[in-house]
Structures are given as structure tokens and as C-alpha cells.
Length: 147
Image (cartoon, rainbow, N blue to C red; front, side):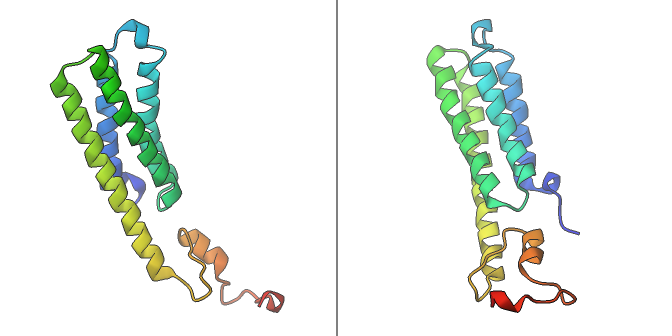
């Protein structure tokens, strides 16, 4: 049995990022409760949600990467408004960079795995369950009309 998403380093680091964002957003002024507060928390949650939802699927990892980019854009907004100390925002920037590198690494890993699984027909299964749907089982009759 393979690793679950919770065992992945990228997921674990994304959880650290999410916790940091949650702690930091608690300190935002009340006028930001309905805007920046919710935006940053949704983006941080989206990173881990998409890693979990798409475990082994690149498309969801691209969504996670987009959510990290949203957070990277929210940091200057906090900085411009003077909401936090520079060192707190620098720590958050570093954490988003770490998570982004890990997501990119995981996407690269999946790309390499897909290249190994490539079939002469050009079909690339996205994950093992897709591979089973593409390839008939030994007991399943092959529809000769599609060949």
C-alpha cells in the first residue's frame, strides 16, 4: 500500500503554512475580518485541500500552487497596510516558498511517473485507478470494434 497524502512532506509543510496563516490572521484588525482575513484563510486551506483531494493528480496540485500564489500576493497587502512586523511576514514568505518548491517537486515526480507509464497508444493514466480503467483486465473481453 502506498503512502497516503498525510504522509507526504508537501502536505505536512502546507499544514504548517496553514497554521501560520491562521495564527497571523487572528491579529488582523476588525475591519479586515470580512476581506483579507477570510481570503488568506481560504487560500491556506485550499493548498492542503487540493493536495489531499488530488493525491497523485497533477491538476489539483496546480490549484494548490495557485493558492500559494494568492497567499504570496496577500503578504504585500498586509505589509502595505502595516498590519504585521516585517520579520513575521518574511517568515510567511519563506514558508510559502518552501511549500511552492515542494508542490513543484511533487508535480515533477508525478510527471516522471507518468512518463514511465506511457503507453504506445499515447494514453497516459493520471493515477492507478485510471490505469485500470484504460487497460482491460485479463478476464475482461476486449471489444474488437474499438481496435
